[in-house]
Amino acid sequence: MSGHEHAHTYGPSGTGTVVLDLGGDTGALIIYTGRQLLGREIEVSRADRDGDPRTHSAVRERRVRDGTFHSAVYPDLPAGVYTVWWDSETPVGSVTVTGGVVAEFALPTSLNASSD
Image (cartoon, rainbow, N blue to C red):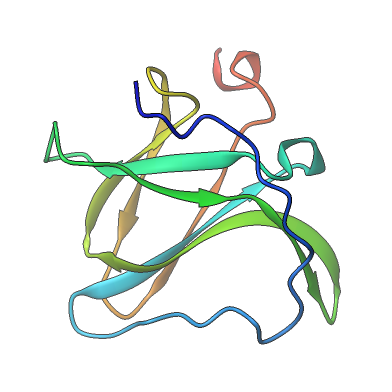
């Protein structure tokens, strides 16, 4: 078990309040979610490094010029393929993080939505 399956209460973040450390072999990841996951932590892990600690980030409301959305932001990830976890035992997908680039992933609203 990861120990990070809990929710946080954070206020919304506004335009320009998230700093991303991009360049070289470092990229960033934004995981978009629905409002229903507000405060929940989402974990990611390097797909090629089983057993390494997972990285987690809380879903927050993001207020930008064009409106409001909900996401978890991972500002400085080493380049590689990452597994996105629904919970401590269930992977929901994977995403490639490239140095100098912001990768994006849309988390399904439920596990049933990711099954065909």
